[in-house]
Image 1 (cartoon, one colour):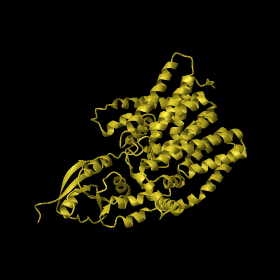
Image 2 (tube, one colour):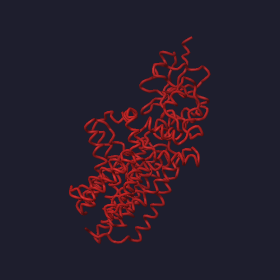
Image 3 (cartoon, rainbow, N blue to C red):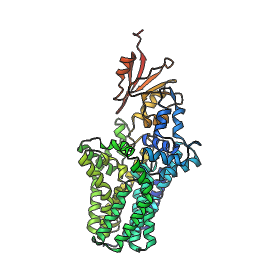
Image 4 (cartoon, rainbow, N blue to C red):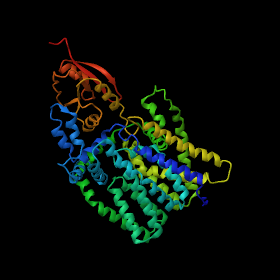
Amino acid sequence: MYRLLKNPIWLKTLVIFILTLGIFFRFINLDKKIYWGDETFTSLRLSGYTTEEVNSQLFDGRIVTIEDIQKYQRTNSQKDFTDTIKGLALEEPQLPPLYFLIARFWLKLFGNSIAVTRSISALISLLIFPCTYWLCLELFGSSLVGWIAMAIMAVSPFNVLYAQEARPYSLWAVTIVLSNASFLRALRLKTKLSWLLYGITMTLGLYTYLLSILVAIGNGLYVLVIERFRFTKTVIAYIIASLLAILAFFPWILAIIVNFHSFRETSKWAFETMPISNVIQEWMRNISYSFMDFWYFFTYFPDSKFNLSFGTYLIPLLLILVGYSVYFICRETPPKISVFILTLMGANSLPLILSDLLSGGYRSIMARYFFPCYIGIYLSVAYLFARKINSRLFITNLWKLSFLALLMGGIISFSVSSQLETWWTKRTLDHVIVPRLINQTSHPLLILENSIPMVASLSYLLNSDVDFQFIKTKQLPIVPNKFSNVFLLESPKFPVNKFEEEQKMKGKLVYKGRKQNLWKLEKNSGIK
């Protein structure tokens, strides 16, 4: 294998600067982007309330205020840590409790603001840097690859965006890298203590995110391949460490089994169909977005004068870079490196991709499920650049420029996205524009479906004088006469014509959204 040279001073200086920028942008404008549906469920879990309690106490037909809704988005003295665990186990068993317990403790110390709630994710995300450096030392035996990999992750829009989200993803990314580094260390040292450490990190991963099981399976496949499918002491050690992790995780496995109906109910969205051409297109976008995404601005604002739409032409180049880096690492490295990268990526991505291809779902377009795969991609690209910028050929300068361009693309990306209220990880433009229009009126009433994520998200964006009224499944609400400004957030189940027909109201279209339209309802003057 080609021997990597020592770290050049210019590269260390550059990476330190890039790391500083990456850390800064993980904490800037934490409350800028809208607090979207998934995050409101995080706050619901941290509050200790359940959706059943919200449905019975909030959606009871009465006029509801912002304060009424926010009650279920804050920690309180009536609920404690056990209520958080209970809510997850009963209603969202696919989400293990480790992140939520850490976040609840954080909120008890510093309050319930959006910035505080998201800051624990940003803080946890910083651990990815030392863990990545350690992983590169174990895998490549090279600090140079470690420096480059840290730089790539520091400016990756994918990493920065999820570091600013009140969800378990930044903790999951850390546990993935940490468990894999400890796994390689156990293979190298072959001691009981090193395998115990691997079992502990695997347990942390399982208690963070359920898809960590795919990471552990990937490690198992790697051991089998490296040991040439022989039942060696190393294979036995891996099995024992895995069994210990599963045994430690068994209480939550039991919770999943007991509440499997909730598990299925909260996952049924993933079985909706999507054309395979659209799915493949999303795959390519997600891979490119893992390095830069500044052109996404024009998905929502195509007429903006701030024109960076040329970035879409970089997508094929980024896909070529990723493909070549994986090919290069398979061609130029021994199996202990190339097989590790392939199992890390494949064990996570192939089950999701194949399940979509066979069932017609679209789980595989959710970039957040592919953290292990993207980490494998970052490692491959980092190794490629480490090799290319250290050769003594004339083309080396082109590789250096390419590396700088990749970093610059990431910097531009989070410089743009940090100033906006929504981005591709949320895709909630309607919830940005609708509150602006409603907030321009005096003491309005907003009528909408009794959807917890939608209602809770809007409660962070609307003025405190806005009241809510909810549509029940088979009955339209009676609109009180005291409101002069009445708005309807239309849905397919409850179109505006139902109000026009049943309550003799006239609807005026205020905003035509991507998923929902906003109407202003007025009493029909022709009806007495």
